[in-house]
Image (cartoon, rainbow, N blue to C red; front, side, top):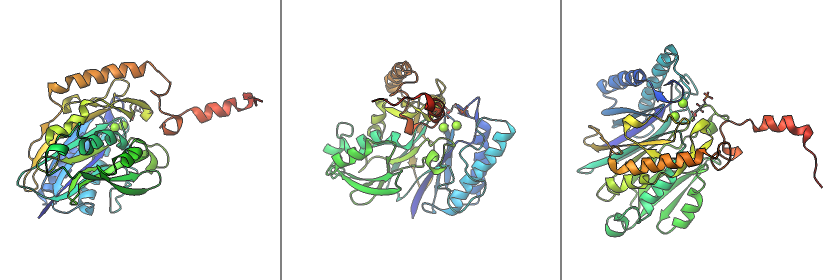
Length: 364
Ligand code: F6R
Ligand code: MG
Ligand code: MG
C-alpha cells in the first residue's frame, strides 16, 4: 500500500499586517483535519505556519490530487477565513480565489506539494515552508541538493546516488514543462533555473523513476491575472538511503541566497532559515523565511517532527542574512533591491509615466 503526503498551504489572514497567522486559525484548521482523521480520510496531519501562511501537512492513502483531501483542505481554509474576518485579521481569505470548491484545489489559490510513494523500512521526509518569497526560491538550494557534489557528498561517494537525478521543470509563464537529467544536462538545467521567476522545479526523481522531491509551484499573482496575494512555496523532500541524507538536505540553506519577495512582493532579500518559533518575518515584512521539519513516516503516520533549523549551527547563516538585509535595504527604491518593474507585485510606474507623458521630449 502506498502513502501520500499532501502539503496544502494558504495565507487566510494574519495579525497586525502580513506578519503572523493567528493561532486560532491554526486551531480551526486542526478541528477540520481532526474530523477528517476521525472519518478515516487522513492517516495523520501536522499543522504549522511560516509567517502569515498556514501549512497543513497531511498523510493519507488516497493518492495525489484526491478530491476529498483537497476539499477538506479548502474547507479548513474557508472556516479559518470566517474566523479571520470576525477577528478583523489582515488579509482575511486573501489566498482563496473562490468560495466554492470545484474538484481540485489547484488554481483556487492555495499552494500544493504532493507525493505518493511506497514506504521504505524507514522513510525520513522533510518539509520546507517559506514566507515572503516565490516558488523559484527553491531552484538554487534544490539544484545544489540533488546535483552538486560540493553540497551533497552522496552524489560522489554513495553508489546508490551516483547515477544522479531527473528534474521536472515548469515554465510558469508559457504553462509547459520539461524533464532534464543530471549530471548529463546540468548546464542546460542551470540555464533555465537561473530564471527563478519563470522556470521552477516541480518534481525531482531518481533515475529509476522513484519520487525524491515535490514542490508547490503556484504563482498566485499569475493565476489571478493581477496581484491578489503571495505565492510563498512549500516543498517535500525524501531523505537517506538512496536519497540525500537529512544533513545534506538542509545544507544548501546554510547559504542565505537572494530571493524575490519581501516587502510588497517586490524586493530581493536573503532567505533566512529559522526554527518554527522564529518564523516571524517582521523587519520590512521579512526578510524572507524558510522553516524545515523532519519526519519519520511510518505506516502513513507522520509522528513528531524535528525542527531542523533549530540548530545553533545555522546562527551564522541568520547573522549573515541580517547583514545582507542591512546591505540590501540601503539601496532603498533602487534595483537590485527593488525588483525590475515587470516582476513587481505593486507598481506606481504606469501612473507616474502617464502623468509625465506630456513632459517627455523626443531626443535627436
Ligand atoms: C509581501 C506582503 C507584504 C505586503 C505589505 C503591504 O508579500 O505580503 O509585504 O505587500 O505589507 O500590504 P497591503 O498592500 O495589504 O497594505
Ligand atoms: Mg499575507
Ligand atoms: Mg505569506
